[in-house]
Length: 499
Image 1 (spheres, rainbow, N blue to C red):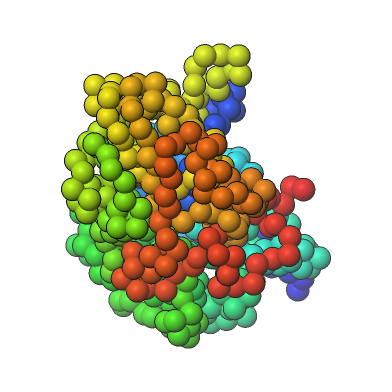
Image 2: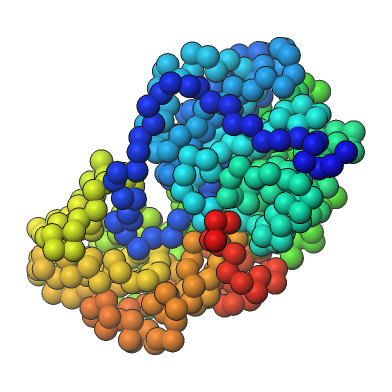
């Protein structure tokens, strides 16, 4: 039987709801990195419907992706292969309404929030992916980026596969379904797929009677297990467990496959690497994860406080006030203040109602996308020497504007400190660090960068401090050093398959 005849991709969604068009340009108001996605899965052994719980879990993970979201559920007591799914473009509270859940009945399900680093931003690329194939039905949610997805996709296409999306997650889904035809269990099929794919992935897979979580052997992306009453959860961050009132059980190990059934949790660690080869994304601790999360036993908030303390030790400067660029710079700013003894304060008011999608100001317009989101408290900074902490400078397109805003508000001096090292290399593992030519630090000295952004001084976190942020956990520093845990692809594969 040919591969094409074995299974096909189906997208099952609630009909009739008017979807938002793309009249408003999606535009970032700050020069920030973006994460790939957040995943959430739950299996309630008492048979309770889980769709609304997934909704709240995704709401807690909204910071990991704001372009699209989706939920897929199934009833383990009902006929196999029946999956009810809904997904759309926008934020969780925009896509889902109470009416959405009227027909989404089931005690097992997966959810996803997405920001695209591979594959276009479109409804077709929203997850979870739902696969209907000869062995039944699977729903999959993926966080990360594969570095061999292009080659694997071409191989599958020549074998008759028909793709419905332009995302690398579909490559994983196909390989799981293809392996499942020849294996005894879904978890064995996931293991076979893991042996094929390379790169970063945290997966949650729903089969008719099982919930499966898998993390790549390097542990790039976080994944953890929780429990609430008689229900088990697999999700990207512990903050999602807190939101739904679940208790943290443990992290999924890098390389581990966990299978949750009514018989309990089964673990397969055959893909695990020696601990020293693991390579967690350091930006989970610096920026991506919510500060109230813990990743692999390490408090994200504590890591950010430490980053600020190290900045104060290594890049001291005399000043009157330490401030953070909301929200990601706040904890590091507090750490700088605690270490230096310089008072910590608030310099910015953030407009919490600005989403990712809004009308883009014209070049001739006086409205600034930065000012729409941030405004300076003149009374807090006027006549003072300010230390401004941010988590990163990528292209530098926002830092100069924020420095200017502080000085226009009357700040005597603005000293910028960055709680990460300079970006010198792109990322291929689910973070949208761009090509080197677009990075402000590429081929420039720190003094040249300082002049470009208009700060009175500029200091970065030292690269050797990064392991200290995680308490010695092995990390990936490729975007700072060019030394990747996996050989990067020769071509930049972080675009989509539409080229």
